[in-house]
Amino acid sequence: MYHVKEAFYTLQGEGAQTGRASVFCRFSGCNLWSGRESDRTKSLCRFCDTDFVGTDGQNGGRFANAESLADHLHALWPTRAMRSSPYVVFTGGEPLLQLDDALITAMQARGFEVAVETNGTLPVPPGIDWLCVSPKGKSPLVIESGDELKLVYPQVDAPPERFDTLRFTYFFLQPMDTSPREQNSHTVPDTVAYCLRYPQWRLSLQTHKIIGID
Ligand SMILES: C[S@@+](CC[C@H](N)C(=O)[O-])C[C@H]1O[C@@H](n2cnc3c(N)ncnc32)[C@H](O)[C@@H]1O
Ligand SMILES: Nc1nc2[nH]cc(C(=O)O)c2c(=O)[nH]1
Ligand code: SF4
Ligand SMILES: [Mg+2]
Image (cartoon, rainbow, N blue to C red; front, side, top):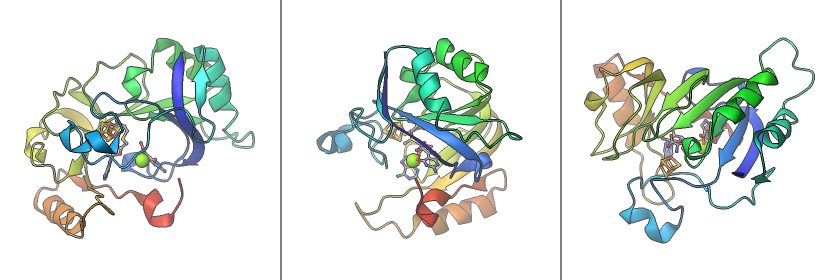
């Protein structure tokens, strides 16, 4: 059984695939935070910008098997988009709590390239086409290679220097969005300054938030 908070068709807003039309599948649940506000300050990940609790979002629900979830996600891809590969991004919550071989295979059988946004603390199933790892604070990183490492900046317990020798094609810093919980007008200029000083790192903005899409 897969638990999906929501699923929607939008443009990838972050990282090297920014601007690419994508079906997003947001799984419910995470291993680094319960999702309850009352637990936030005692969690391993404290700055999450996402509601991943339950299955009550748009196109969310419980799916008994890989084929039924794959059909559901396939139906969100426009039938007119003939010349580009359909693209699905599994996120969450933490997608690697639920994403398995059967679902990856079912999406690829429908022509999709499969992308994943993960916190890097769980093993990766084989066959993923685009792997984005976003390390969190003190939590142990078990994935040490992939396509992009996209670090939310700044995090006291996860400075970029800890990750810059790992085997990733791209290294991104994404300014922490803490609003409206506190004023965070410094995270963008601080991130820009780091990227200027250490050109291995590129700036990733959450462009969907800037333009007001999902
Ligand atoms: C909500 S997470 C879900 C996937 C996975 N659990 C993870 O953390 O990578 C999706 C992306 O949003 C980023 N993110 C979460 N909260 C953020 C915030 N407050 N500011 C900037 N990026 C954030 C994460 O680091 C991750 O790259
Ligand atoms: N447009 C858009 N792009 C995204 N890239 C990563 C997201 C996520 O929440 O994982 C996300 C999201 O929620 N929306
Ligand atoms: S690991 Fe990802 S989904 Fe989980 S709390 Fe942190 S940012 Fe949110
Ligand atoms: Mg998001």
